[in-house]
Image (cartoon, rainbow, N blue to C red; front, side, top):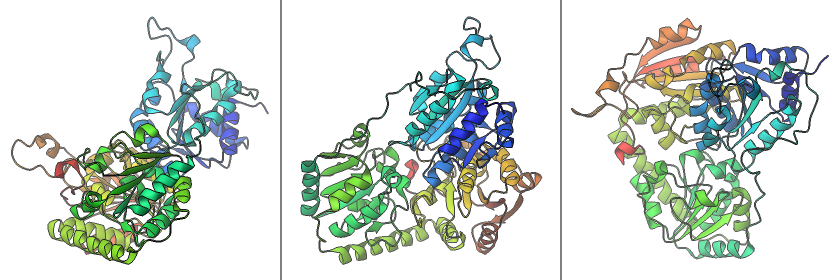
Length: 549
């Protein structure tokens, strides 16, 4: 049997432990199917989607829920370029996605006319550099396997992120000889291993935390990706320090941890913990504008940053001390020698009181949102993953839903990309979640509704909750004349139940988040098949959104 590029690619992905890959059905992917028929990479599940952006969103969702590599396979020219918005989200969220796309070989291109070959673009690879961590080109088909291995290593190494690999068009069908890829280098320099944190810096940080009267631990997505949750929980208890998490780190410690401030820092009761802190330990975060209300939170008197990225750690709040290293390793080292400080029981009582006050205020000011969050918590099965989109219902989940564990919430918080929710939930479901529960709205769902075909074809355990607010926009209902969003409120939407059923997907509709919603959501999330639940409701945006700061 002759060995083709498709054989080489599938064998390499299998060697890397890839179990699922996402792509589009079409002529460019036929060699992969043939190679699997030959018995190569048959253990890899190839899921076909209908749009290239959805392919990368699905790979992104898969990577976030599994902590592993998400693989996306697309074709040349417009197909490849359709992935750029999704790659931007993956990049901003440090999601390890390996995008493999074909390009028209240089020999077939005619730069002067730009029409030498179908789908040609003079600088296709260059277009990906701003939204990827690194890019690689397979110049010789024999080097395909070696280049993919290098690219995968770059994608998953800290700080993780999407990586682009270009293949010559037709390379998957060509016969190849295994090569070492020695002539191919990434556009960006290879990552160097991070040196150990100097012992004197660790000791200085430890002393500052022990001496602090009001220490605070601020935890970001980098800490979650490093698996630092247990170490952070231990350190917080020893210091009697509250833990505040960013949206990207939700679930990093259990919801009943005695030091967890479970609500967002935007809530005044939680924000007071920041205002009172004399030393803040910031772990795996860059203090982005969404979390800090565009930097309006004051610089703390003392700031210690634990981060792999020195530039990112200092971008918004310059640290007094930077511990450059892996979050889990550094926090474990910091904990050594710290004896438990008094005040843990008092802190826990205060945090319980904060929780009660925040929940009471939400119930009073936003009863519909409170009813929605309670219904989700009481009906969604354990082991499910919530995948909210960029919409008002998603903002409420991101800020106020009590996440049970790490990687059980997938949010488009990197770029705030509208439309990530549904295709990402397909990747989440393929990644082994008990159930992927996508919460979206009428606008966001329509950007990827064609992927209902994939959901039903692959029998993926996905429930889509469409909060249909009548096209009132992403930030909530328009208020007053001249608000600037009249056009959004006039958007025409389809019969979503009929749309879903036309794909063979079970669907139903309810009004509001009351008893009927709970009954159907419980039923839908315990099904073996994909389904869609449409809810007629209009939520006001929470205080975590910029319109409410």
